[in-house]
Length: 312
Image (cartoon, rainbow, N blue to C red; front, side, top):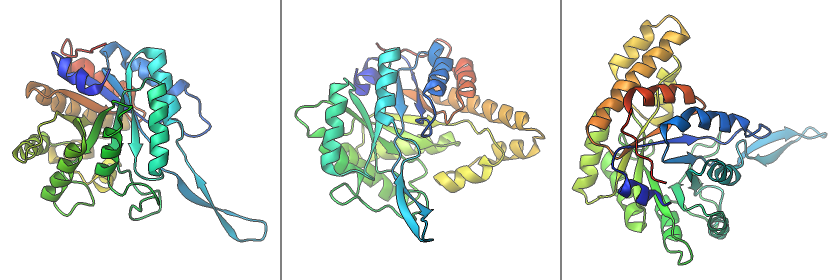
C-alpha cells in the first residue's frame, strides 16, 4: 500500500522506523533480527537507506595511488524487496540524487514497479566521505525537487513519494525560511508527505509545522526521532546534523558515570519526547534505529501501547 494511503486510513498514530543496509560482506541476518525486535509493535512501513559511492585510494605496485569507487552499504533494493516479501510490511527505499543519472533512476523505478514496491523517500543525499560539497552526477539531479518531479511524472508508475524536512534547517541552508521554500518546491513537484530530520526539542518540530502551514504546505509532516545512547553523541549529533541538544539532556548525560546510565538517560528522555508528540496528535513517529532496535522497542512499549494502528 502507498504510504500516503496508510497515513490517510490510519485511526491513530503510526509507528515506523528506518534501517541501514548491512556493510558489504555482512549477512542479512542482523537486519531480520532488528526487525523482529520491533514486529510486536506493528510497524506500518520500514524505510531502507541508500548510500552513495565513495572514492578510496589503493597503492599500486609502482607506488602510485589508484582511485577506486566503492559502496560500503550496497543492497538497498534487494533488502527492501526481501523485507516486504518476508514480512508483508510495506517498505520505503530511499532514492538519492548523488551517483545516479536520470536514465538510471528510470531503470530503478522500473525494478521497483516489478517488485511491487509502491513507495520511495527522495533525498539529495550527502556528499561522499571526504568530499566537502555535493556535486551532481553528470546527467543526474542537482536538487531533490527535480528528482521528485521525474518520479511523479511517470505515467507507468504510481509511487507515494516522501521527502525530508529539517526543523532546525538543513546544514547547508542559509536560513530556515530558505529551507522551507526549498521544501515547498518538493511538495509542488509531487511529494505526498514529509518526514523530519531528528530533533531533541519538540518546540522545533511544532514551530516547523506552523511555518510550513503558513506557506501553504499541507501534507502530513511526520517527526523523526532518535534516542541518544552514547556520550560522544553530545558532540557528534549537533556537528553532523546541525541540531540542538537541550540542556536537560546534556546535563543528565554528563552526570552519568557508566554507558548504561547514559543509555537509560537517553531512553527516558526519548519516552518523554514521544509522549508529548503523540499527545499533540502527530500522524506518527518515525524512528532512526541505527542498529539499536531494542531501545526503540523500549520507547514504543512505554508510549504507544494501543495507539499504533497498522494498515495492511
